[in-house]
Amino acid sequence: MGYRVAVVGATGNVGREVLTTLAERNFPIDDIVALASDRSAGTTISFGEDDELKVRKLDDFDFKGTDIVLSSPGAKVSAVFAPRAAKASAVVIDNTSHFRMDPDVPLIVPEVNGHAIADYGRRNIIANPNCSTIQMVVALKPLHDLAVIERVVVSTYQSVSGAGRGAMDELFSQTRGVFVNDAMEKREFAKQIAFNVIPQIDIFMEDGSTKEEWKMAAETKKILDPRIKVSATCVRVPVFIGHAEAVNIAFANPISVEEARAALSAAPGVIVVDHHAEDGFVTPAECAGEDAVYVSRIRDDGSIENGLNLWVVSDNLRKGAALNAVQIAEALVAGYLEKAA
Image 1 (tube, rainbow, N blue to C red):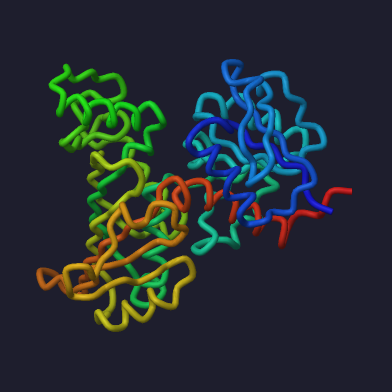
Image 2: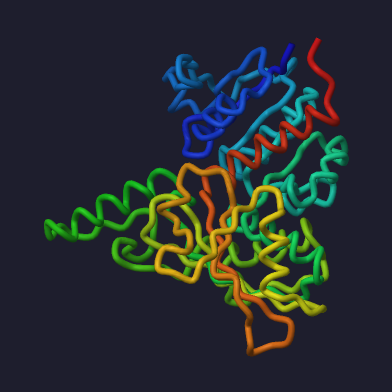
């Protein structure tokens, strides 16, 4: 016997990846339903190699009898439907930003703070962190356990898939337009993204930071340790899938490159590829479709005491979103949720 599962936002980038990941990992499902907006209702979507699901309307769906909801429809939509699903006794694993900083909602990366899933019953909602935060804290956790992190300075190189399918289409059309001399049409981004980088992700805040940069700091504190100081600069780059991060870390205690490499190599969810050669590191193109967080370029920062630099890469649609949500669901059913009758 398995679980009754609903995937909300099933036709989006992350929703499709959730369905793929559930099938790949043989999540115990008795029944699954794909939910989306009125615009997508009635279409079909693949689930696994052989099955297709007919997309149903989210607005009038009755969540009674649903065990788990994997949700990525956008924050405004989640704000409305997630409490309704939770009231119907479903556990909502939400991939939007709406519930992440709610003190009654656990914010979970299973390799980092999986124990906090135990608090899901306060609202029957579990939040999935921001994609750029997830891969960073997976890499930070074993190092924090070893030498205690005091401060992190991170610069991100984030792919357009993090902004949705429209952003991917815009990169494709603008790239083509450069070669055929078409006018640059800008719909998803304020600046040209093809052959360019844009130092803005999400809206600007009063202090000059963007909301994406604020998320990385606030979420790291909630997930890993509230004492860690984080300074982030988040940049959109002309890559379709895969986020990269240059991470500078200041520790309270001495830590060598060799100790850091050993700790990272032993950490769940991390693969270290760190050779001092032209192909001795991982790039976003190589991580697309992969589950791991890859760490390369581990080296001393001689400008500060007890400092290290890392290069961290991961598929933002998988570990940065869908896979992390499914891993939360796996941990939930393994330790906290009884099987459906």
